[in-house]
Image (tube, rainbow, N blue to C red; front, top):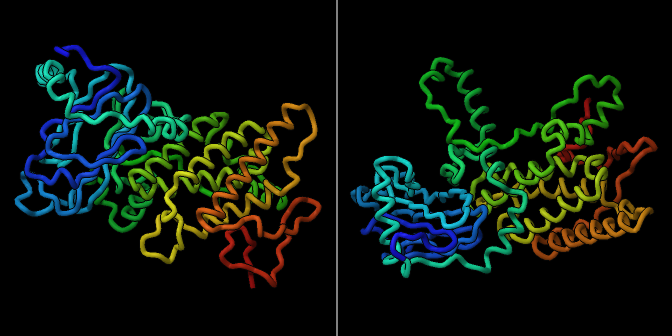
Amino acid sequence: MASSKPPQNTLVFENLPSKANLNLWLMGIDTQFFNINNIFRGIKLIPPGIHLFHYSIPPGDESPQSNGIPSEAISSSSRFGIWLDCKDNDVLILRWDDESERLNIVDPNKDEEQLNYSKCLSSIGDIYPFMVSYPENSLKWFNFLINYIDFEVIQEFVPCDNDMYSGDITSMMPSKEENMVLLDALQKVNPGALSSLEDQTDKELKYTIIQFKISKENTESVKEVTENYLDKSWYLNQLYGNDIELMLGELQLSFINFVILGNFCSGLQWLNIIRLILMSRKFIKSSQKVALDFLTVFQHHLEQLPKEYLIDDLALNNLLDLQKYILVLENFARDIFPKDTWDLNGCCGKMKLSGFIKEKWQRILNINKSKFNIDFEKLGQRNIDENEIEVYDLNDYDENDEDAPAIVS
């Protein structure tokens, strides 16, 4: 291959610790995971497009400078991820750094790296046989999961200072909202300590902050207040405007960061976006295409969501709040998807699209029933008055229902 670049895109790994048990490391790209060994040198034949490279190190593994004592990064077995925007014939070098104990992408534009990068290209033919090929069966499913994610979406929500790849994302990385809550609490306890804190803007996920108890401004009547509380369409529009693709992109990004990297705040964000959409009756019914697009994304997520991630919230290792998930889907099933909601009259195109929507919703119900043992079809109908406001039976009051009225004695 001389100094020419190999086909498609290539990740080259340098300086992997020789004393480590590399066969216990778990690397991956997109939805695929694999173990490596001491002769592993990279990943080749990566198709152009958006990809997620990820890896983790087993607890207790030793780096060359750990002196037998596992570092915090290693002992926690945190998973690391880097989003990539691969063009064609890109060659990225990932070099292990002993001090930070993680893989860093080498910037070939830096003067001190240009010579090393040229040497790597000239010798890439020698190490090419020791690279694993991108798994072709991964591409189709991953494209289903990222069809609303472009690099602008990644730059919007993930630490990033260039146009090719993101900064590191870890299992423990907090969201901007979590850091704001922490800083606010610290401000109340010790205001003087804030000046000495390190700036965290490049170490947090910049997800949209969703506040379900927020009230719409300039709302006067009790009826309007109630309607705006139960239907969040106005709030969804306030957060995302007409950029529905950005919202779906954030939904997909948070899901992948949650499922593949195990990032907890991403799981919360995924559930919050779903909750916001499913509480926005006017929004979801205003466009059949938007409804179908969302349900398609949601279906793919449920198909890929590990069964053990959606378990009873009393378990010690739960990752999602099962009760909140059930409540969100209950509201959706009753408010937006009663059986006759999408039986629309009109042109053939609208009727056909309506049929697709009902089919998607039925698939979602089937997945919940067969995979997670949640049967939403057994739910009873709510009691709605002539103004489409729910009438609660206080004899059957559930104090855990977030949408139920408060009982004041």
